[in-house]
Image 1 (cartoon, helix red, strand yellow):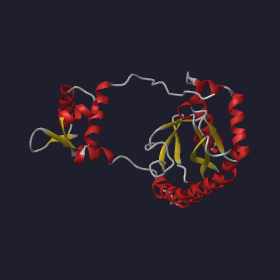
Image 2 (cartoon, one colour; image 1 turned 90 degrees about the vertical axis):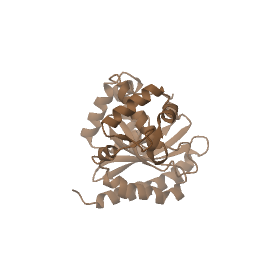
Image 3 (cartoon, rainbow, N blue to C red; image 1 turned 180 degrees about the horizontal axis):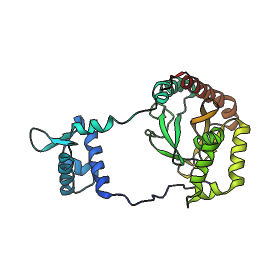
Image 4 (cartoon, rainbow, N blue to C red; image 1 turned 135 degrees about the horizontal axis):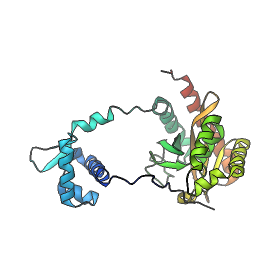
Amino acid sequence: MPLDVSHPAPYREVRGLSRGLAVLRALNALPGGIGGVVELARSTGLHRTTVKRLLETLRAEGLVHHKDDGLSYALGFEVRRLSEGYVGAGWIDHVAAPAMRAHLRALSWPSDLGTPDSGFMIVRESTHRMSLLSQHRATIGIRIPMLVSSLGRAWLAWCAHEERQATLSLLQERTDAIGAMARDAAYVKRILRETRRRGYAVNRGEWATEGHVTAIGLPIRVGEHAMGAINLVLRAQVVSDREIATRYVPLLRALADDISEGATRLPRG
């Protein structure tokens, strides 16, 4: 049965910060990163007085500045400075992304590449925006649950033992359905055993928000253990199990192997 595995927030959000970030995102989405209070209020759903106060706070921090007319705001240099600390994973940018694009024509269906983070798989690269068969357009950055997704199962089945135990311990502390699954040792053992024996991970609608999806997943490995995983997202009623096993698993394996080999060749530093 599909399960809703939304993760409960451990702390209350700081509403002022959330609203300030919403204004920054809305300003960033406008042409040239320039906009006025009225249009930002409209796009964020915030009152104009609130938007004006947030903009003035952001201006004091150097994140936005007034344009010449004095009525509009533009993104400031400090926004760019904030991005200087971001360092992307080289193997994703230089190996995985080009390989995923190159294999898309053969696969047709969209793929997501994920890496583990705090008990979830975080989508780091995707071909959803390029695949004509995709039902989504923006998946990069979303958190995918471990135990009910092909990405999570593929990584858990082939990651290092210490990483697996640490992740399961983290999941076991949760009070939702995923926590109950993680505490069911027999269930976890069965999922991992079946995944390894099959040679790839499968999710047949167990993730409630994607109940119409069948997804298969394979690990991205450097050395003996997985550092991430890649999936193929298919419509459950369109592709048969036989076609998945005989056609799509070999195609996805070719992509996973290309990424794994390319990542292995990258210089370490």
